[in-house]
Length: 572
Image (cartoon, rainbow, N blue to C red; front, side):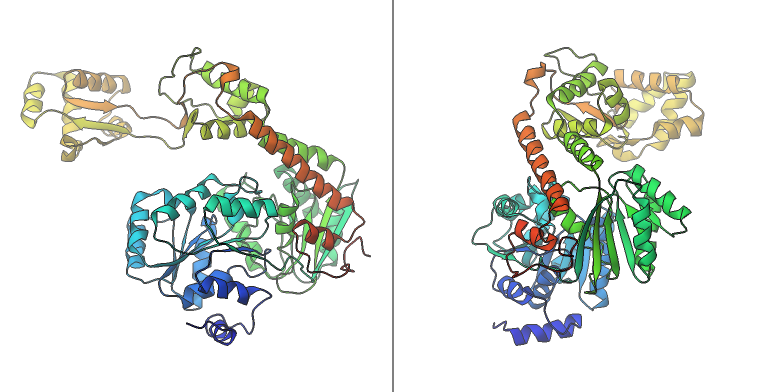
């Protein structure tokens, strides 16, 4: 079929009510419609979503969209449904029955677009379902998450290449807002796709004014000045730490500014409420850590203010790019000081801990279980919090968290995040239970009777969940008496029984000498040094007298400019 520009413009008007494509969109869409593997590097607000949404509508079958933004999938699909586009999402927020219903509807061809989280590809049942579905193409949103060199690497994205091997040959479109040439190559390599057409488009945002300023006094004052002169529109203020979010918010509230806050230390309900208030109010202000913003699309953001140097120019550009999505003039402020460099170094060192920190945390874990070198640890969880492990190790909480992640990746530990229930299986016949019951007395007899009355008959065939607290509360049994009776029944071969496992860390590997810990420390050092280099580029951006816009375009190798911007703090 001929997908010429006239046809595409017609579909654009019919389905999205838009009059024309943004720069580069039509060429990308035509490439996807031809079934060509495609990599799109287009900044936040540049219109990446349309590059897979329009082809999904035009092509036969269902487009599968992989996204890390579970919290926003409902909003994305709701927006498509309002446009009369058949779309849904399948993720862990759904009940099993609802999830199965949506998978069944997908197999029946009910949807043009289905959003999933990458973790869904770890399910053999889901992969089997995809094999039966008519998939038009696979879109990988936030594709930089698959690259170990990207600023937001997520191991779950590595499941995509494995899934593609099991599925029929389907085209892939990978999309990201920020990817250096190195990251672009790593995305293609990690997806294991060939014959890829690359598009680097739209990094020049003519309506954005990039302003950097060294601030050696309280940064709440220049923030207040920006808010005061902004009569219409919203503002996002990014802070390097939760403490600074709270501190600046309190100072601004004293200056009579109405502000919301957002960071990972808040309860989920409060974060959700504050985010919704920011999105729904016409003129709103939110102070946040970089936990805020992925997937946020609020057109009238007039200012994005960074109060600290970000860790990379990619991260800065993506966050600053949330300003001015309505095409009107907007301002991207970077208020920095010398202390920001120390904060950058702290975060980098915490993300990529040093050898001595690994040794301290590793030995603290094994010492808790009294395990000697060469011995395996019993499968009992270590129920200490990260803070307690950090205190025992004498390292920072942030470094401790990173060490635990690296140890889990190396299969040294696993984190049991949920309380694992007790299991019970009834091994004898009903006749044997009745015979045993007739020959015992007292409390033990009452406990056996309670179990037989309460446990499902399926326990004769397989282990079933068994809530000890239920029996203790309903029958007023003492805990020690109850456990003693269970052990007695187990010794008599009447039952098999496992005690519940509390949340905690389980040691999987034998204890090793310090120099034998199975972690690639050379690779960690390489990544740490690379992160230092990226942080230095951000400092250079803050201090350069070169046009700020051109500095950014040069970094991303987008050379479609002829002169300076005339808008940034270097040009004025």
